[in-house]
Length: 346
Image (cartoon, rainbow, N blue to C red; front, side):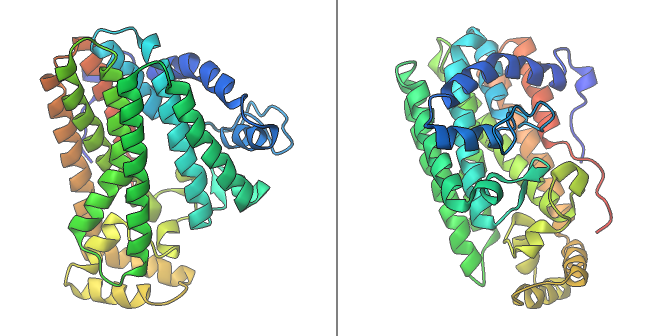
């Protein structure tokens, strides 16, 4: 995939942006999580990578990338507001995101998250679901009183996220899903929260006309990220993703590349339809399914879609009339979020 070259743009590196975000957001996030009842706090701290399953500090555990809080804080700076003004909203967005991760791991039966056992696999599905619910309610408590606009945006994004996830579950039960329906579902499931992160950051400024293009930037970037995640769910290196090769195929997920192939009216798509009709797929069958996806053009199509969406997202930055450094750093972060290592052979 061809992306912008961060080395040609002045500004902090993606690594520096993430470090800056964590140093600003993590303390507030930890304070918020500490207010949860002990049973849920313990699970949340494990999920965030701060503690092991016994509640002891886990400094070597892999934590989240904090992309969504980074978008909120960078956008606030880019519209001329202090980044610190966006910290409550950034924390709230991260809480909603992790609510979704906890719930999705249970729904999909994922045994690993960030290269170790997922929270539900350690503490049980019911406890993990309740902890996710607690994070969602905590998100609204964190942002309450700081910005009415941010509260409204977070409510709308959360509802859209849930609507997208509900649609995805319906798709899993349907034999046929249209590509357009799958894209609209992904825009809700993933694009809405990234759009919210950018919009709440823009709302920290004094010019309301900057909010809409920044929301669009985040929504388009979020949809591009979903394409990238779907590619990783099929061909991603387990060392990078923390999940088995072909994990989405094993779950019979109707991800974007899969839906494209199933509706491609190609011999490969027809054979993939037959494979997907089987209750379980062997390792050999999973590898065959991945090859069929490539033969149907699904991998190439998904990569091109991701490229096009990133380009469209970047085209919204000049519309928002941001500071030069702010626009540059948002472009750097967008590149890092959607850049993928070379595919391993499937």
